[in-house]
Length: 222
Image 1 (cartoon, helix red, strand yellow):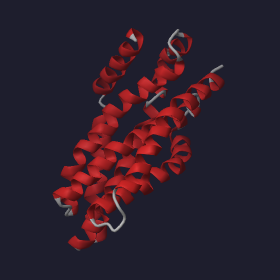
Image 2 (tube, rainbow, N blue to C red):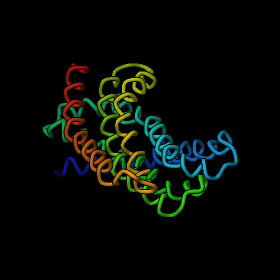
Image 3 (spheres, helix red, strand yellow):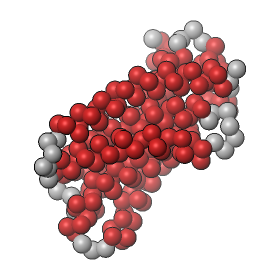
């Protein structure tokens, strides 16, 4: 547990020190949400109807933007080799790294989403519903991305390949995240059904993601 805590604190410090975690993700999120009203037009009703989908799409793209930093930096400086040879189970080590990555990239998106919802003419109830679904769904984006990061960690300039691998796997999360947000705002589908599926997808990714990433790292770096 001491080693895992040290790894967790190290990743948090590196993310803050480098400045490429929360700052870049939130700025990209802001750019996407800000540009959408210019593309759609001044129809406030249309913006409000499309608001949850725009926020979820922006969060998804912002999450993909930072995934290449999840394991590539450790591979470049050699610390990933130390993690592989440590006595700590590799599955737990990569799970801790993914958790630290979500705290520095995914959680800021959740916190900023109600403020950005104002740009899309969303009411307080709608913004709260979107933030709740992002809180439940963005960990799935991170742990699914963990698998892609492990598969492409040894490749030079693997960022584009990482996005291509991960994006199709995140579509169910996007679908049920938007569906849950719309259900909470307008119905007629009950909020619990799509939100429950979204939570189930997150729980599945929390289990499968570290295991698949550990297998990919062992096979790819041997």
